[in-house]
Image (cartoon, rainbow, N blue to C red; front, side, top):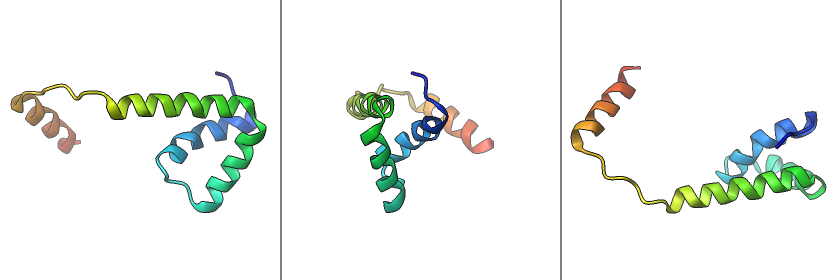
Length: 77
């Protein structure tokens, strides 16, 4: 989906909105914007669907060896 210049920022804010990381004022401004912008409403709805799918997805079984390797790589950076 393409956003116009104003909506580029709104697209970035959508994720923070879903994760409830916006201040009350930021959330109010974002919700006011999506009331008037069909593209941002659609983007938010799609992002909410993806978020729900990821939250309910079954986590794969990971061997302790792989988990250790990944955690070691993360902490080394």
